[in-house]
Length: 286
Image 1 (cartoon, rainbow, N blue to C red):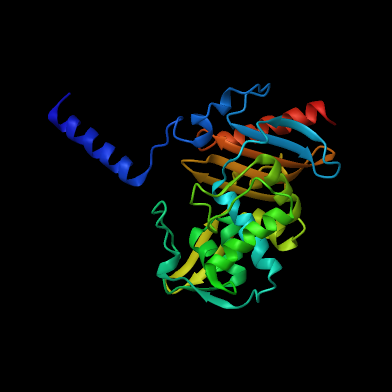
Image 2 (tube, rainbow, N blue to C red):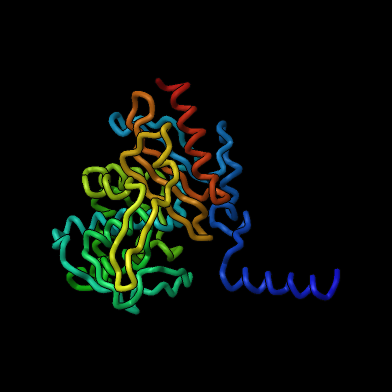
């Protein structure tokens, strides 16, 4: 290898270490624990999967549903639930500050300190575009501040029967935000009662006005635009420790389903898993 190629390889390695751009199959909590080796007739990439009828609560498919793993931005569903249940003014204007900058993973955001948005807009961005600074600002502007907000997240989890769930912050960037597929199914069932969550989480795109002009955002879930899917509520999530995660309430055939996928490998793997599940349900349970 020439000196030039050696230098290029070194620079790429340094960049990926600093940016966290590379995610190996063994870096997630689930993959390290060998959860992917569980019996799985559908050969899903996800280490954890749960498919249940939202009406009858019948479990149609399960893979490691009791295992507790990091849940990444699936956290934001509870963040929004707590915000809405508090009855705070959705049209109140809130400011993004330095406190909202991500010091967990050093992720970027187009919501800059000093920008102002309504609580409604921040909820929209947190659900649809998984905006971390939006979720952080919602927690900061709660009565009693961020700690009171996180305490309420955990209190609501217990009240909903999510006994294996822990929240430490509002974005999901911390790997200490953990839950099981069974618990997350309970959270989705509760979250779908809010029309605002159903609407905002499934909007394909949304724009907000900032001091630098209009900011356009797109939904993090590409299945929203698929003609094969009728999705009522959804949320995606990703950090290295959690892998690729997805929860949805969707109409598949004649059934309203709750689908939970945790720790999928690769950027499109959770979507491919969801497609496998949809075909399985259509062929086997209708």
